[in-house]
Length: 539
Picture 1 (tube, rainbow, N blue to C red):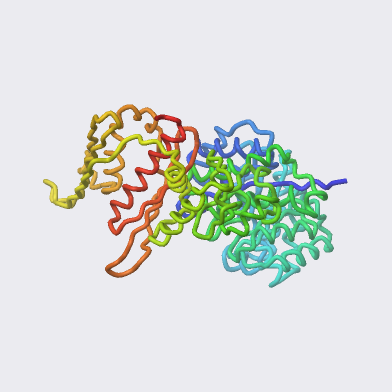
Picture 2 (picture 1 turned 45 degrees about the horizontal axis):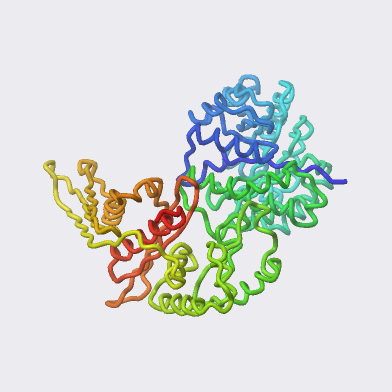
C-alpha cells in the first residue's frame, strides 16, 4: 500500500519574488494550466489584494483539477478576523483553500510584529478558525519555524498547535532563511510528530540558501511530512525555493519514494517535465540551465570517450535514469576527448550513418582536435560539429558563398545633444547559379538611444535576402549569445557560441572563432543558417 504525498506549487507567488521576475496575468494562467496538466495537487495563485496582478489572476484563473490557493497573512492584532480587511481580500478570492503565513519564532513576533507572544498565538487561532468556519480548507505556513524551534521549541510548537487545533488541514513547517540542513529538518519533523501533530497534516517549505532545499524536503518526507511545497525551476527569493522539477522525478523514480508514495502524478505526465521547465524559461526569457538535474541539456551529455563507449553498450553505465522518462534526451557531444565510438554515435544522432572502417572518421576526429586547439569548442556547438563532419564525409551541400560583408558602428550626438550609437551592415552572397544578392540593415530608431550592436546588424543583413532559401530561415530566432576570450594579451582569440530556435521548437548551437569578435560572430551566424538549410533538406 502506498501513502498519499501531496505536491504544492508556489511558483506564482513565492517564485515571483525572484529578483527580475514579474509574471503577467496571462503568464500566470499559462503556468497554472501546465501545472494542472502535470498533476500538481495545490497551485498557490498569489496574494489577493497585495498587488494588481495577483488580484487579476484570481479573476481570470483557469478551471483546474488542482486546488487553487489564495495566500495571505493571519489577522492583525487589535481586530477580529471578521473585520480584518487584509484577510478579507484573501477570502474574497473565492478559492476553496486558503494559506495563511504566521510567525512561529518568538524573536520575530516581538521584534518584527511588536506584539506579545500570546497575541500572536490568538491571531493564528482566530484566523484559521475563521477560514474553517467559512467552509474553506485552511493551511498555515509557520514562518521561520526551524529557526524558531531551535531557539524556543515550546513556542514554535504552540504556534503550530494553535492552527492545528483550530482546524487547519496542513501545518507547513517553513525553513524561511534556508539555513537548516537536511539532518536537522528530519530530526525536528520527527519531534513535531512526536509532540502530537500528525504527519499526514504536516508540510515542508524549504529555501535553497545552502543548496539543500531539495534534500531538506526529501528528508522531511522520510521523517513523516506528507506535503511538499516548492517552485518550478527552483524560483524564489534570494537563492530560490525547493525545486519541484528535481523533486518530482526523484519521488517517482527513486527508492524508497517510488514504491512508498503516490503523488498523483503519472509516469505519462512525467514525460512532460522537461517541456514544462523550458516553457517557464521561455516565459521569463531566460536560457535554460544546461546542468539542471533531469531536464538540463547537459543532464545526459557524455563527453569523455570512455563514457560514450560504455553508453553505446549499455546506457545505465553512466546514466541514473533513462532520459526519456522526463522528456529529455541523451547527447554525445564532440570534443578533443572523443573516441570513434563517441563520434559514430553522435553522427548517427545527426542522421549520418558511417561504417566503423570509414577513413573519414579519423579525418573528422583530427579536424575536431585541431580546431579545438585553435579555440573552437564543439561540446556545446553540436550544429557546427555536424557541418564539419558533413564536409569530411562529402555530404555537405553548397548553398551560397559570402562574397563580402561590412559593418559600421557610429557613436555621435543627435540634434538634441544626446549620445546615440548606430550600427549598419551590408552582406553580399553569391548563389550556385552565379547570381548575387545584397542584404542591408541599419538601426532605424536612433531617437530611442538604443542600438542592438554590430552583430545584430550583421545578422539582420545576412538574413534579409537569401533568395531561394529565404522562406526556410524566416522562422529562425537567436536565443543566446556567449563570448569567451580563449587567449590573453595581444594574441587574444575570441570564441562566440550562439543558440538558435525555430518555429518547430528545434534548438541548435554554433561556434565561431577569430581574433575579431564580429568575424567570429559572423562565422557562427553563417553556420546556423547552413545547418538549418541542411536539416530542412533545401538544396
